[in-house]
Length: 180
Image (tube, rainbow, N blue to C red; front, side):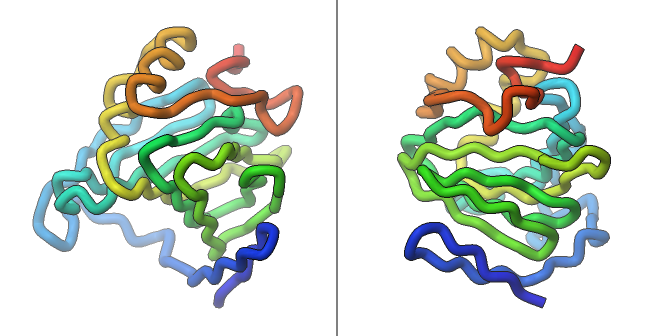
């Protein structure tokens, strides 16, 4: 199964991945980091592939977001960000375009392009792989676990990630407006 996602004049093809396959070791034999962390309440992630394991080419996280969780508009100055939706639906803003995409879809956000994502569902979690190319941004995620929102924003800036606008909905839970 494949899905096309259109943003302006760009079309992205996606292939379905097996969301059930998950092992403790990568195909290269390196152990993956095995602890789930929270960016904010209702959004969990685990580092699946480090930049070191991929020789700097990329780093990969698995993210699970509860309904109505997401991120504010932001920019990565140094990386492209690739989303592969495994379960649920995501609303993704890419510049001035928005698209709701489901399991089996993938979306690529260019370096320096303002973007945001959220789980627009009222009842189903969103599960996705997020790849950063080149790798290295997983260090930001390692350092921000358990950090206060204001500190997270300052830390993100050190890694070339800047908040550039609000979340996609007023009642969305983000680091700027966490769940109680």
